Image 1: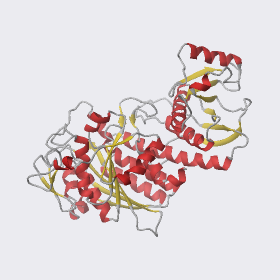
Image 2 (image 1 turned 60 degrees about the vertical axis):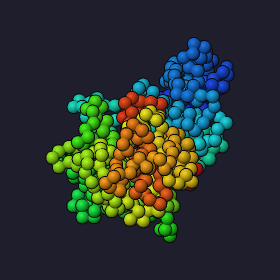
Image 3 (image 1 turned 90 degrees about the vertical axis):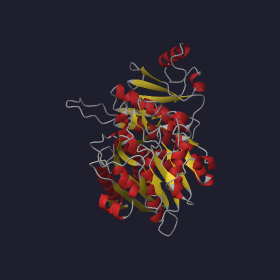
Image 4 (image 1 turned 30 degrees about the vertical axis):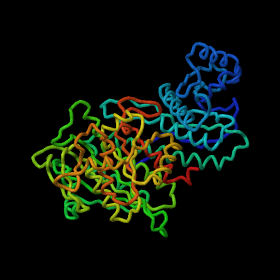
Length: 502
């Protein structure tokens, strides 16, 4: 499966002129202020049509709005796609404009677009945002129908620059933006795979393909090796399934002279029934996305492999199916972990934190001295943030600050949750070192779920990212598609590859 997931090509530069040939439509991005000008599109009839839409409140220039105006031969394009930028131009609103333009182009079965860069805005930032947006906007979920008709494809985009633009600089920006968008779409593809097409062993095979493609180190432990090494938590979670667990590790050494190693740990539950603490059947099909954390890390590695930041990474993906059977683990079980700690299982549907704890310990054993875990961990995060933001918990506020900044640069919403001693007290067990759920999962469930993982990080600087509300959407929302979103890929890219993306 490992391959580029997008059909569009970019990187063709020319000076802007209305005589530009070869594109089916031109995209013009306008702020609310620019929309109030009399001459916007350069043709009186088109400008009048646009102002009529504005007068009726149909197109106000707000971010997310897009109108397709037929040109009737007035311009060398079939359509002008007018995209709103809101009160002012920003990287986020340009990215959104390009996403909506790409979706409209597919709906109109257009194969090529020309995009005019906005005036008065940094060209490199604009090119980056527009490229990302176009590629993200062309994403569609794979379908498995017998007689699926051929889909329209957006095959070419021409970025129209000023004559003095530095083409080499902008070409580098395009290449970096393409890597980020491809990594995000790759994570979406993985997360959208049905569970019968993505088992723990299949996920391991995909990781090995990616590692081979980019020259990463890769190790996969099967269920026998997992048990032999004492990873009782991962064995317990996977015990109810006919498809045994895997512990997947990838290593990137971009700075071999440094002893600093960042550990990334991703939840790889390829399907989650809840085990004996069975979930409601309503909406359980969404649980194909419970390996969204693993997909995020593989998507981020897809970007790292292309941009090659100067740093060292160890990526650990504990993967299992959480099923119910006569061999499944049970509420009340005591499980011994790789760290030597014991866990009292109160709820078998709180399985992700157990396997992530194993991944955290294993990453430390492999040399990680800082840790970030990514997981569709809790439904409780939806109570706090709905499907709008990802939650973060940390034991080191200074470690979190640059990641919050990276999220802002990537246009993803990330918000810190508190780490007070009272929350850690809620996880104390009478019979084990820690229990896998606080007494009430309705009280601070997202926080205590994260802090269970943090218990195993111990003194190592650690960040937990709960994507339980943002990794999967039941309908398209803003720039995110229905189904898997690839959330946090762009944030991790901005964090890991900051120098390459500036």
